Image 1 (spheres, helix red, strand yellow):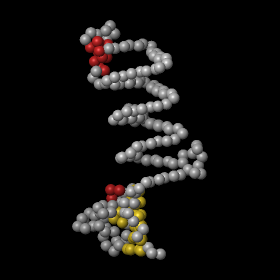
Image 2 (cartoon, rainbow, N blue to C red):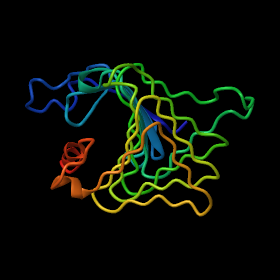
Image 3 (cartoon, rainbow, N blue to C red):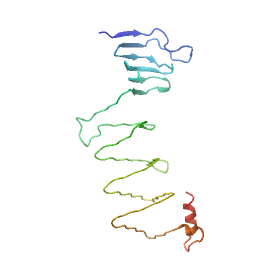
Length: 208
């Protein structure tokens, strides 16, 4: 076997920083193709890796950190593609892949590309109570487009569609609008109120 083994006999990466991690029993095995390190201290001297696996290109690595600001972290870093496949022995009804963050947020970020979800069915469930949780928010700097055979929105309390500019509702077939009371308000109410007090409503909507 051409791999080499090395023991650390002094503090690693400590330099003149007295707060840097110190390790006297780190071990490294490797050759020109890659290496595996136990107890490696990162370049900044603030975190010790329990296990660090590196390819010849050190950017291609898998790291399990043990202390410091990244205690308990597991990081997989690669300059190329990252692929994960599972479920060949599972049935359609089973949960083959589960990503569960017991606490904290989950961030999926495509810094220079698109984010795509593809499946037979896609479900988004936002659970919670009160006004601070159980919310589903979509923000787009340009357009939000929905294309489907049928589009249905069911709001149990209220709904609002707002635009500071032009708004259109188009049905090339039949358009039905039903309500116990229907009121139409124009900007004319700003100067002269109607019998049902639409001036105040007009003022409220122009504040948005």
